[in-house]
Every structure is written in structure tokens, then in C-alpha cells.
View 1 (tube, rainbow, N blue to C red):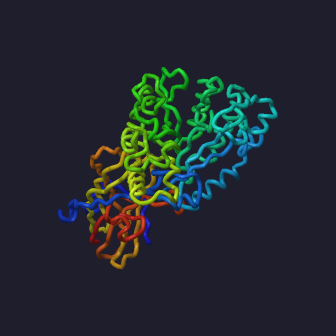
View 2: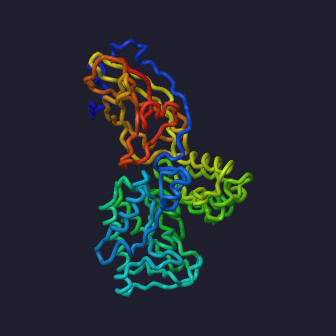
View 3: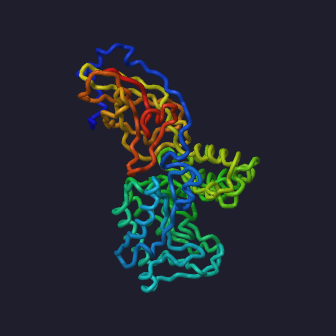
Length: 458
């Protein structure tokens, strides 16, 4: 197979003889629509990490928590083996991980590292969410804890930023479950100074892997540090329950907070995720829905432009029949959906191939990663005989119903004269990861993971 790595050579078409092609060889032709699969990568419903759950409902992401105590046995010392165990198990199923590191998980053994306990960092018991004083709320203002968090985040990013096994990281570390609140013990939460330290540390450490925060906040927020303009998305952990505006001035509902923060359009560059509220896991897909009035699922998706949602309710065997079909449609609606509406393929006397596409994002959000895009050629026997990488980038393609033009020209493929089918794919950097499939009938028609665009005569 010939691999050609240089592509999109605009301006050299004349050198390749493309301008001498018959006009009909470069005419656009339509490609028929078909819904993209529910388990397209980096979007959809997310189970807690589980091989069983991952088979119960189509998904491409799996969620896990991990306590800081497991990863940081001593000051400036890190043990990544527990983390690797989670990542490798999820990746083995072709999925990417969404995760959070915590210090305090109500009802579980404290996640504060032992060396900080031994150093005298205060941690207070509390009663909340069936905790019964089992877990402990640490003193987030203690400089020793703050230094440890900065050290951990720096090491975390140095080790894992851009790791293809990681889909999204929620900032975690602060508050119950790492959700940046301490509920009725508000005085125990981290100050704005500490919040900013944590956010700044994450932004320094992670330049490629996408980060999300729990609460949108603008410069006038009385409790949370301003995060409106940071390169961090948000996760709504009460989705379809407290998402849509409440009509109350000081509401904590997600879109109320987004509005006050001036962050309603942040989804255009940063991802929105979250969790369907557990109270509606069992009845969200009923007809009529069990979501509270005004918090119905699809309006919440359209308003938030959510890409992924934890949703344990759909990964249960009891979800069957029409309810399951509604859940599948709900999962498909999240995030991006790319449709190649038209393609034009031409070939040069020097056996170069010119491909032009018109692509539309029919989803509710962009794709947030710059994954490689490749073209290939199949010979008359269906054998893949050449592949070349373009410099196309689908990241940031807005769901604006507009057609976006892409063009690439290969160098000579050194193939014998004949008819060839030209294919397209987006490369998932996770080895054996799920392919990103287009919303086209010709997806997988000739090769798994590839969209057949048309034919070229060399």
C-alpha cells in the first residue's frame, strides 16, 4: 500500500495537470444522508466504568472516579498504576475515559493523601448524603494541601495531557465528589483564591486534553472564581432536572448560572457534559417523560449544546421497547454529527487525485479534537492500495446547518491506470478505538470505518 503524507496542496493543481481534466470529472455529486451511529467517539451517554454496562447500550465513553490518595503516596511522589488500570480497561473496549480525581466523596474513605493527614492538614467530619461522618472535608486553605494539589496537577498533565485514552477531565479535587460544592457546609469550601490556583494549574498542565468545570461563573459571582473566559468547559450534573432556566434571580440551575456568567456561547469552543439527574434515571424515557415540567430532555440538549452525559439509567436491562428507542435517539442527538453532503473527485495525468467535499455538522455541538483526516483509494478488487493524509480539521465545525468546503490534492500515487474508489476517514488516535463515522449511507460501504466518496479514473 502506498502511503502519501503530504496533501491539500492548493496552488499546485496546475503542476499536477488538474486544470486539464474534463469538467465532468470534477462536478459535485450528492451523498445520501443516514443517521450516524449512537456510539460515535467522544459523545453520547456514559456509563460508570463497566464491561457489562458498556455492552448494554451503545457508548464510546466510560466514567470513573479515583481518590488522590491512590495516586500520591508522598509529597512530590506519584503512583500512576491505579490510574493506568482504569484507562487500560476502558481503552481495551475501544472507549475513551471521562474521569475525576477527588479528595472527598461522601460515604467513602477520605481521598486526602495520608502524608497530608500525617502533616496535620485538618479534615472535618460531616453528615450529608448518607455520609454519617465517614468521609472528611479537608481544609482547602491549608498551604500544604494547596502545594500538593499544584504538584499533582502539574505531574498529571506532564504524564497524561494528550493521552488518547482520555476523552475529558472534570476538574474535581474540590468539594463533595469533586463537584466544587460542600452543600450545606458552604463555609468549608475552597476560597476563590484556591479555586483560581486549581484552575490555573490545570490550564498550565493540560493544553490538549479538554477540561470541564462544574459551575459557570463570571466576574460578579459571589462564591465562585471567574471562569467565563478560561479554556474550560462545563458539566451540568443535574441534567433534565435543573438545567433550563428557573425564572428565579439567584437560581443555581445550569442555564441560569450560564446566563449570569455570560457564558451561553462557550460551547462553541469548549465542551459541555454532565450527568442526567439520578431522580429521573428510571422514567426520563417514558411517554410522557418523568423529567420535571420545563426540564424535558431534548430542549435541555438544544439549549446547552451538550456533548456527553453520564446516564446510568440507560445501561440497565429494564430499558426496552419504545423507551429504549427514545433513549437511543436522545444519545444520538448529543454532540456532533457530520454529514458529507457533496463530493467532487478528479484525477490528473500524473495520477494525483483531487478531492473536494462539502460537509455539514447536523449535531448540536462541535467536535473538540483535531483528529487526523485521511483519504484512500481502492482498486477494482476492493483492495486498499493507497492512503494519504490531509490537513483538514473538523474540530470547531459549528452546527450551523452551513456547508463547509474542504479540498485536498495528493501527489502522484504511482498507481497503474484504472478506476479507483476514493474513501474518507477520521483517525481515532486511540489504537483500536471506535471510528468516527459520518451520517451517510455510504459509510462503511466498502471498508469498515471509511466513507466511500466516489470514483476516480487514473
